[in-house]
Image (cartoon, rainbow, N blue to C red; front, side, top):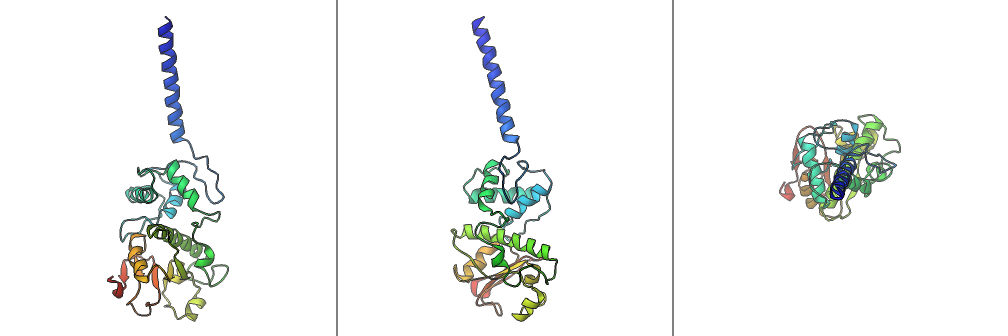
Length: 244
């Protein structure tokens, strides 16, 4: 009778422990963040703004030559990008945005949602309110945010070296003043000009892996002193001096 009682007690304890494990792995994240706090852990098949917020932060981890859609749908491309993010940061690679993955993102982002190693001021040396471009001020600022997260991924891939931005968002007036093309992606907040070290060719080559489908660098007219990275509807890379 005593042994039977012990077996029943052990079974109840095992059931309670299993329930606790399930609750622990499915519960909403407890992290409080001044930028954005995910209300739940994420995996393939989910949709919502929280998925889109994740996509913004892993936008620098698409396949080579690809751009990750920010559509709020956790499909195969998003799952693959999560896996690349996890591998890059030494996390468990399972394609799910669980405690480890979201925890790393919390570590990487500042209170204004920019990645830790870049700032809005770097991406806008034109004016203080992001106005005067081809899109609304809020859209230009959002586009610049995505560019910064892509650059954060690229920075880490290069060994956490500093990446220097000489020009980001430009109003039409600022763009005209520096002789920029009227159709430049700068006026959308979608572009960044990179200078200094690593070398311009290193930057051009590496950016192919981080969601930039427009790359112009050394050997392309007027681009021998910087590498231009941006996002557009089609892929166009040209940096002849770098073998691109």
